[in-house]
Structures are given as structure tokens and as C-alpha cells.
Amino acid sequence: VTESDLQQMASALRKAGYRLTRARKTILRVLHEGEKSLSPAEIWERGRLYYDKLGLVTVYRTLDTMMQLGLVQRVHGVHNCHNYVSTEQRTRHHLVCQRCGQVSEFTCHGLENLIEVVQQETGFAVSEHVVELIGFCAACQRQIIEGQRTQREVTE
Amino acid sequence: VTESDLQQMASALRKAGYRLTRARKTILRVLHEGEKSLSPAEIWERGRLYYDKLGLVTVYRTLDTMMQLGLVQRVHGVHNCHNYVSTEQRTRHHLVCQRCGQVSEFTCHGLENLIEVVQQETGFAVSEHVVELIGFCAACQRQIIEGQRTQREVTE
DNA sequence: GTACTTGCAAATAATTTGCAAATAT
DNA sequence: ATATTTGCAAATTATTTGCAAGTAC
Image 1: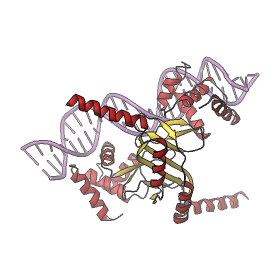
Image 2: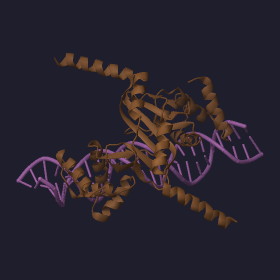
Image 3: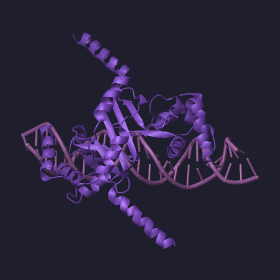
């Protein structure tokens, strides 16, 4: 999450022939600094702190183009599938905290093997994959335990 | 995809204290015979062939309760995340054809190991996962090749 | 200067809620 | 008999489109 990452994403837009407008820079920035995945509405909300004229429609349109360029990815929770994160690395493997929403990435060993086996067995040609682990991050686990303790104290 | 599977799902509803209504039986049946994942609107459309008074709202509500009971699962395509399939087995691993929409399941060897490693490394407690492979089924691969051949014949 | 982009308003699509009538047990 | 469930209409929410004004290059 460095400044140069941001530059890189900006130049990817430029290379593809898109103009580097204030709205797009704002959206890039918001996605970039977000440690968790964000809905279009949330991106809009945060973006207006930097650029108060930003329109929600522009957020939708920009997310579309950025998806096409592979600069952002959709995050598929068990329920919510409409959040986005910026593609920092090329790994497509998200670890999603179902309490605080934090999204981190993990390296997924052995997936290539699995894909190979499945292709052999089924005749499928696999071109994409969605792999997400959903659970509770370390911090939230601690807070949940705290909460239980507090509750017990109150109840008794 | 047998008749007794259907019975089983029906009795799961009953056990959870839900009534076995005509609408619910219809929705179960549609999901059950569907080889591919279906959107709420598609389920409604197919369901009305069996029960013409079926309401779309009921489809939404029934899908909610069936999700809660684990009788259906959402299928997360790269774009579309609002389709459902019935949970025949307990595997949560879908192989999705991006051309014809067919959903099949595959056995996912080695995932437990991966989850274990990630938990160790990150302190995350993983409780759910979404693993989907997206690509082209064998039949669609053949048809694509056919199509190219035909096109070439036409062009030349 | 000009083509691309924006933001608004309005249109469309998707999902949820309130409630009287219907029905499963 | 009665509590649950339904289906309709209406409300809400999410997303897309048309278009004149604005802006990056």
C-alpha cells in the first residue's frame, strides 16, 4: 500500500486510453487506502471527503472500467457480493473477516495441482477461480471473547 | 438427483418447524431438477409451470429460509452472484461453466491443509469458504470449436 | 479545440415490507 | 382452530441511461 502502487494504477488507466480525471484519482485513492472491501456507496461516501462533487454514478462507471482493466476485484462474501478491493498483487485469494470486514490476501499453495486434477477428471477448462476464506480475524476473536466476559459479568 | 433427495430436503424443512406448503414444494422441485444455478426470477418462472399462483416474493422468502437451513447455496460467478443451487452433498465447491451456466461439484482435496496453514500464519479463524472454478465445460468447448470452424467457412 | 467524462435527474431493475386472505397442521 | 404462510400492491434500494455542461489533453 505505497504511493507508487497508486501511480502504477493511474498509469494503467492512462495506458488503456482513459483520462486521469479528478473523480478517477479520488476513487483510486479511496480504494487504495481502504484496508477493507467497500461497496459503491461507501466508496462514494469516502471519496466525497476528498472531492465533494463526486457522483455516485461515476463511482459505478469507474468501477466497471477498473474491473475490465483488472485494477479492482469484487469480493464475494457469503452474503454480500457487491464490495470491491483494489488489486494490489495478482493473487486473487481473499481472507475476509465477517465481523470487521477487513480483507487480506493469502498465498494459496497447491491450487494449481487441484485445478489440474479437476480438469483431467471432468474435461472442464478452468479459466478463472474464486477462492475465499471467511472467518474472524485475530483482533475480532479477542473482542468477541472480551464481550462474552463483559456480558457474563453483567448477567451475574 | 433422486426423488429421495427431494424427500430429504422436504423433511429438513419440516424438522426445522416450517410447514410444507405447495409453494415450497414447488421451489424445492425446481431447484432440485435444475442442472444449473438459477436466479430468483428464473426459479419463479419455472415454478409457475407447476403452480401458476406462485409469487416471486415467496421465492425470495423461501430462498432466505432455505439458505439459513443450508438447503441451497449461492453461486458466485465472476459477475453474477445471485443464483442458487440446491445443496445435494455437503461439498461447497462448484465448477461453473461460463457459457452454458451448468454447475457441477468437485471434490476439493487439500483444502483442509491450506486452511490449516493460513490459520497458523495469520491468526484468522476460518469458518466458511467459497471455492469456485470457472471455465468452459467439455460440451461448450466442443461447440466453441465448431463455431470457429463454421465462421471460418463463412468468412472465406 | 475537441473528444472524453462528469454529475444530475429520471428510468429501470432488484429486493423488501405491510397486510388481508388462504392453508397446513 | 389457529398460527403460519401466501400473494398482491406498494415501498424501498440498487443500478443504469440520457444528456447538457465541464474538463483533460
